Image (cartoon, rainbow, N blue to C red; front, top):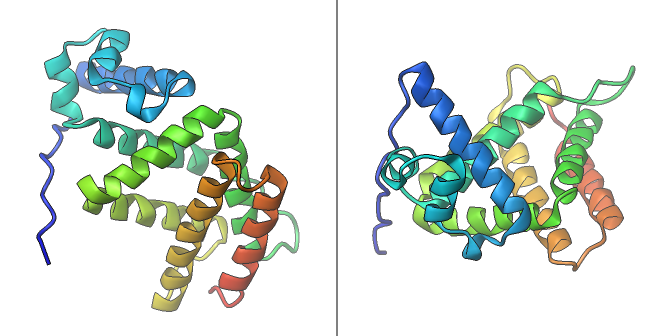
Length: 200
């Protein structure tokens, strides 16, 4: 089996100015992705919109794919900040399903943006696979947090990993018009109930 190529590591901002510059890049790329497909976006366009030099953009994000993986990571952080309120008597699986449905609804508010993130994630699985694995793990950790599982077992982590992949598949089908938003939500809730029935 051929070895997967290692992508160049991104620089980590160390000063408030550098962190602000990185946030500006992420915000500019997000705004552009709402209106443009992944293949149509160029790094030059992102740099221009963020008012940074192209070399600066590549310093923090060595490829367009890595830039959009970072956007996805930011979306997970936003979800973590806005976790749905757990209803009295709600199961962990029910709380996890609410989180996943909310994630899909937010993405589908901007279908082109959702399609761009799906395309970027698929591209990243070939280009920066390790980063996608970390992204899946971060999303899985958020699901466990929503389900109020503080000490997950290996079986819990396996179930959540499968659920993340299932959710991404449902999202992909929905943004491609092969599944309605309502059917997608129903599938997410069904899959969550099945996979997380023994959670915790």
